Length: 378
Image 1 (cartoon, rainbow, N blue to C red):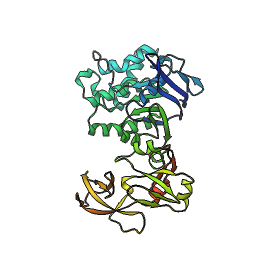
Image 2: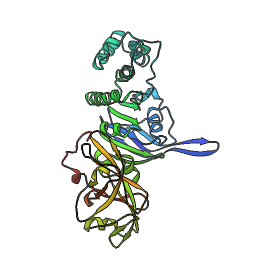
Image 3: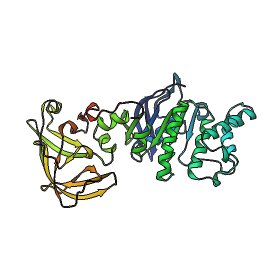
Image 4: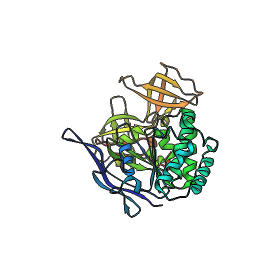
């Protein structure tokens, strides 16, 4: 096994004589045994990136290497990579055993007895041993997903590629399979690149996540780093549900002045703003304190809509001077109703600031966000 490297990789398509950029100059190093999640909105280039690693799409510029060996000039069968597709891509006329055997029969010199042993052991590990003689049409979605995983595992590849493998499952099974996939990847220790548009999957599964937008790599970071220390406004708004609130502000001698409120900055935060004349202030919904009486950075608001979520309420609030709303979250047992007047406190140690180009110039630190230890998949 070895690390997987993307070195200034780009993919262009020809659209009637004009060049369409699907992936633009992406570089990242995925460590041996690491679980990296590619995440972003539809059409951002994450699946195209995965397909270039697999060899299903050619690389227009740049290199892909596995260890010291260049891979982008090799056919897919010679890359020692196994891919799990969104559609599972099982052969409907074959049994589970036949589906799991097929790749080994076609690409290795293993004896039949050895293939049977590997298939049986993998099936037992995936808890599908009793399904080996069934065909895909007789299986549930979750069972088919396990078969697709098993077909990849038996090949003992250097890298697993997974293209939204859980998107066809219902919510409860998807949650269960997230846990199983994490456990499996940790047991096998295989370098894994996983594509999803679901930020929950990205945050809970990845050792690190790579966020893409419009073909460009925005940030590669641990989930905690991407959440608390986003590289730019896109990452800040994309990661987190409900999304971060943003307020456009002018800078006036160390005070941020917006349409609805002013926000006086202190020391280190003021220094981060420097000579910027316009910034965007961001704050996450869970960091807004409702009903507090802090002397500074507290504003009177009116409750517009309350969305009860059980464990918490999403409270949409507005200022009298504007028509726009922002959202705060509070405990699910707290009673708040539409039309209620309530104070909202924006703690300075929780705010983020972005310059006019959307780049982060000030973030809350991970250390300030709480006592949790930073480790794998945190």
